[in-house]
Image 1 (cartoon, rainbow, N blue to C red):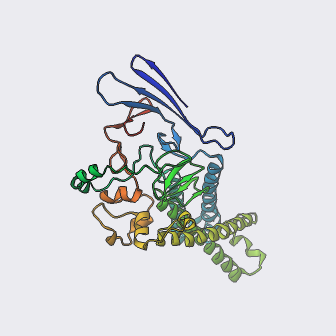
Image 2 (image 1 turned 120 degrees about the horizontal axis):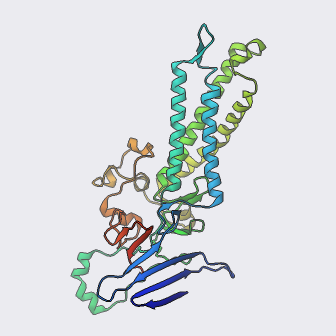
Length: 385
């Protein structure tokens, strides 16, 4: 439904995109204020945007689904509990010494284990945060199909005009009515089409796509590593206590400061076993996705598998924009959630499967797509309306 009202030279348009399922409510509403000048200047559209959301004009990407947010904070709580149980309950009675005054001090190994375990947990939490707040590859509203080689168009222009063949239309999504590239799939939770979508993960409160696949893999990897680390420490400590003291009650407090801390150790052991097995299965599953460059949706559709090099490059990127696919070798920045995924300039649009007239190749706003201080985004609507 579009309502237009003309006042001098200003048109106000309220556009409601409806996707009804047997009388359901509209799925998305966007308000545009289009200023039409009397001269030949380009038309500008002023679009209101939210602070957080998954819309095309929202300032920060964040899925506000209640279930997803609960799972995200629950994940943070599990990592915090693991650091508490290992660093404050398990290690101090084990890797410490007592002086003449009875003051406990950690040994060098105790400090190293504390630092290493905390670092692994911090990397897992930060990778999770990046996977949750990074655009997974949502197709923008001004996305257009990839154009053919312009040199060929110039050479064969007269022949094409003579044939007068109709141009092939855009492939539109039935749910969000936006252009849908070949490798894109619509997510019903994010309500956007995501390029190379693997699945929507409630634990990271986001889709796993080409934009955040690396962060998702690092989150799973560091979570699995922290579970293996804590489980190994508990098992080693258990056999150490049983071997040195057996069942003697006189030395019971040398293994734990208080008997009630045994519940904390059991909770840590259960957490390490449960989530260690879960993340291990996820790593094996995602290894097949990366090496074949096929998501789970692609497998259901029966698409052909690609080579392993292209899959690794699309997940971890290249070292610089001058590097080619043939030079994609293991780098330490693959293990860092602080590094950004980099694609070569000429192949960036080919990997995404679309082009954006209102933006540069790198995704940064151009002169036709600028932010204003009033919380709105002014864009050219020549390709959008």
